[in-house]
Image (cartoon, rainbow, N blue to C red):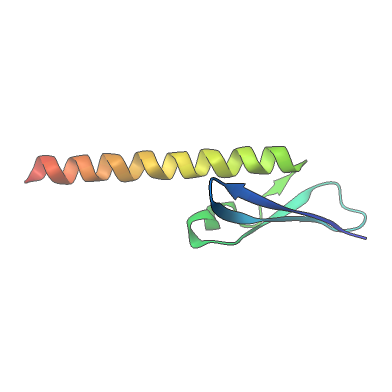
Amino acid sequence: MHKSYVIEVGDDQAGLIIREDGERDYLFHAARNEYSALEGRRFANALLAERAAIAHASSRRRRRAAHHALEAFAL
């Protein structure tokens, strides 16, 4: 029997982690393109997967904000 958990960040379903029988870790499956960088990563538990998804989303927001700031400066 396998175990699975949905990983959410805010209102977004970031992905799903699944642990197959006999495996120690959960494998991340991205539900949205924004989280494809986490695809295939292994996590010991759901909390670690959720933290990684939150950190990834936060990093994307910072990069996007910096990019917009540079564009505005260039005008």
